Image (cartoon, rainbow, N blue to C red):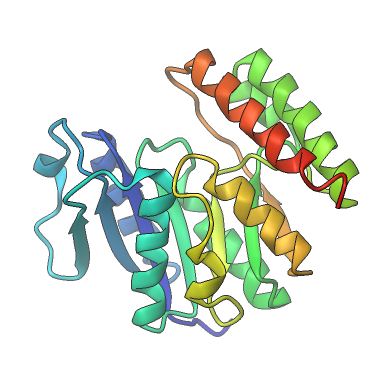
Amino acid sequence: MKIEKILVFIVTYNSSYRLKKILNKLTKLKKRIPFDILISDDCSTDDTKSYFPDKKNIFLNINRKNLGYGGNVKNCLKFAINRKYKYAVMIHGDNQYDAKYIFNLFKKISNTNYDAVTGSRMINPKNALNGKMPFYKFIGNFVLTKFFNLVFKTNFTDAHTGLWMYNLNNLNYNFFKDIDENFNFDNQLRIKLVKNKKQIDEIPIKTYYRNEKSSFHFIYALKFLLEVSKNIIK
């Protein structure tokens, strides 16, 4: 397998000690596949900075003001594109999505040349429940993903994942530029990829849940429905 230039970027906001756990996993993974690391902190108010590694081969970025989830992701993608990485992988600073899947993401995208590959918790639904996904979120994921598939005539199993690998040979920064800078970035990106006839594949993953906020997920679900519904009449 030919190894291309890969950037793994970690988007953090009040992640604190979990960052250290992610970096430990990445250190082990680099024995299997080489990549560079960017940590981009979105103006955290906790002690996240104290967990930043003192290593020259890891890029560090601290946003002077909070850019929002989507804004932080776009910042990282701009960094990757400007430095001519072929692939970029997003890892959340809360450690919900396991870094060990980076190798599987790369294997899939390098073999298919798809525009993006995502990790799906719902290919094997038991994985989601065993990872302590709240049942209301499990049902919501299933229903909203089915709604997305109905509207766009797709067959995704998990339209709400936060684990993405991007093929930057096929996607330039202008593709990302006008997408939401808040928490619905991933959904708007998926919609734009589908509408532009770009290809997205999925790999099965497990995730681990901790403190879930139902009010946040209600707002996310409502916004998701509105964004997808706009495309019914087009």
